[in-house]
Image (cartoon, rainbow, N blue to C red):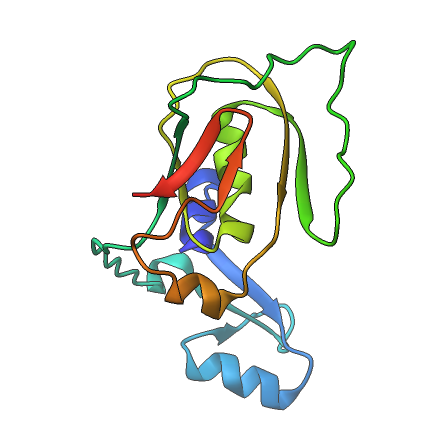
Length: 161
């Protein structure tokens, strides 16, 4: 798929490969590549030989929604004079930085074990420090739907979507 997109953008009409052995050359020829008239170990094929089929399907999957907590936002807008300070962490993990809520929502899925949707409606950049104890992948899947949010920090919370 990427090679077809690159070909369309750059106007590429063929793909050339230098085979490192006769065995490699036979492999490429099996898929329609032909020997170059200039160098017999160079094989080529037109990009029109690539047939791409795309299958899109909707999939329902568990996710978290990141939203402003009931008590209101306690995160501070980013101030270069006061960068975020890492808290003393007792064996857990932390995500610390400065960014938009959308950027934060993109970083949280790895430790959260599922996608995080930004539902805060907040604009601008904020300083944040998230301290948490990561769950194993099997523990994340076995959580019940009534489990409390796994991330709550300074007025922003993630809950099950």
